[in-house]
Amino acid sequence: MDNPSHQPDQYCIVIVSPRIFSSKVDLAVDFGRDTNAANPLLQNEIETIKEIGSLVDALNYMAKKGWQMVNGYSVSNSQTALNEQHYLMRKAGR
Image (cartoon, rainbow, N blue to C red; front, side):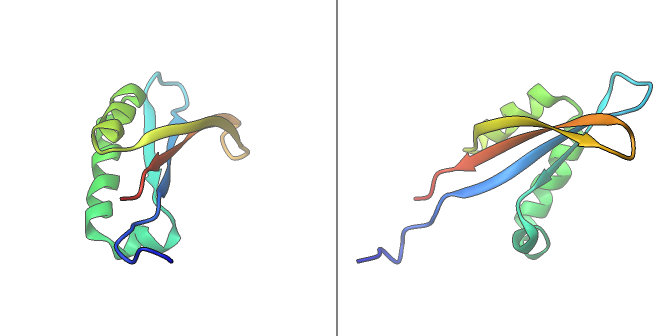
C-alpha cells in the first residue's frame, strides 16, 4: 500500500559552463521541465545559483538545502568547444 503523504526523491542538475578567456564560470540549475516554470520557489533557487559564481559555493549551498551530489560528468559544448560540468543532485523524499 502506498503512503499518500510520502514524497518521492527529487533530482536536479547543477551545470557549470566555463567562460571563454576567463577563469570565471556560469552556473545554472535544472530542476526539470515541469517544475522549473511552475514553482516560484524553484525559480528563486535558480536565480540564487546563478548569482553565486563559484562551483564549490554552489554545491555547499545545495547541500544546505538538503541536496546530495550523486554523480558528476562532463558534456562537450559544440558551440564553444568547451566542456560543461554537470552535477546530478538528489534530495531524499519524506
